[in-house]
Length: 482
Image (cartoon, rainbow, N blue to C red; front, side, top):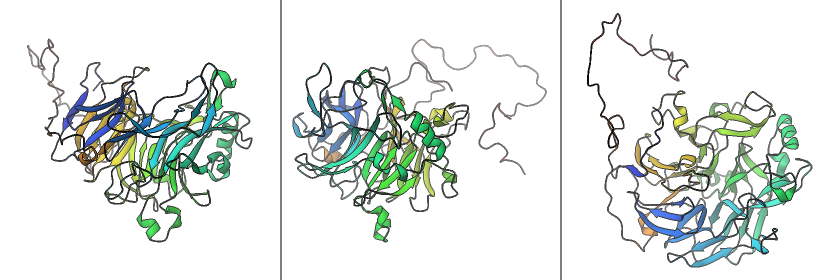
């Protein structure tokens, strides 16, 4: 079924009996950070705040940024990371990672924050029983940018993804730079050659040729308490950091004490232990499901598909840059010890014909997945602005389409989070009203004719029509019959 130019926005489906009720926070285009209830009512807006991502903490606090660097001079550099109360007052701010003087602008201190951050008390930034993030103090893990040179990687300037931890006063307590661990990343000779020639160069005027956004790390969180560490596996120390690099198709864990990479998935998925997974491409929001939630200890990741990675040239990538390509997305839950896929949500689980309609679950960039206390999963299909919740059996029980567009004319949502009603004491628990699914085959806009023919004639047939082979093989072709 084709995509109509007319479609509903806001909440489109809601089953209160099966969904996990709470408030959902997301960045509403250029409007600001918005909080919605299960029926899609916008219950609060922090106008002007930039959520990259936006997170809600207990007490109705929201975290985001107050500005972003001019893209002529930097990629996705947020000026600061702030914690704002219900009334919009800034109660905490970090902006002292680098002092920058861009032409035409007043000199400013920047956090250069991008893509992710975590507050002490909660490893991943979403609700888990007994793991509440601190709101009046504590350390903050921040993903930031740093310009570096490393001739081992490329002779071109590089944009590195620094992972730092700061205290409440803004002092940097810990810093980790991935370019210093290049040898640990596992790039083969073909990937190294491509990286050296073109480390995913992004161009701005002031750098005279641009800068290599070579890894583009888009998530960083604490591993958190888990069964593997309790069994003696030091790689999964709760203080270690798990992160993923979109452009390199890598998910990894950095040891907090030594700085070494102690666990890694990718960039090569051809090994016997990983081959069954298939290549994870351009992924986002890789994290360990926190204790107290179904699937605790497993890796949860939105595997975007799209285009990413470095390697041998192929028809889709003549020079080996972004050499891995796939036109549909997956959400994967993986046991990080055995690499078994414990649970997944793909186009097949969504009920689409595969591969014909695989693209109907597809976000080639951004996006996320959150495990909920009842075992459901909240998925942000980001490039389409679609937020939805599915059960462990893949039943769709809540869906919402963002009505807000940005300057690129997209309703993209980078990431969304669901929190319990109790985290927002300023509001009374809303009434939860079921939203029945629309029968799209019968639904018509005003003025359109209903389904069905006004005049019918019968034509003599030779054989009954039986659905057979399509122009491309489906995923279940050949599986039926004796």
